[in-house]
Image (cartoon, rainbow, N blue to C red):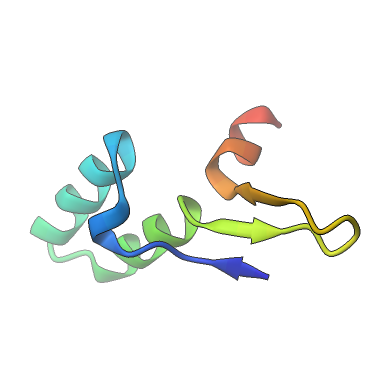
Length: 58
């Protein structure tokens, strides 16, 4: 199950993208950013991971 992070928890590039999207009135992008930099748990092994790090590794 995926869990998004709150905007206040974002750091680095995630925080910058979120701020830019918010300032531009792009609420859907801000929602996507909080999900992309959130966490998920593998249903098979139960390992918790950061979604954005998994995307980069692909």
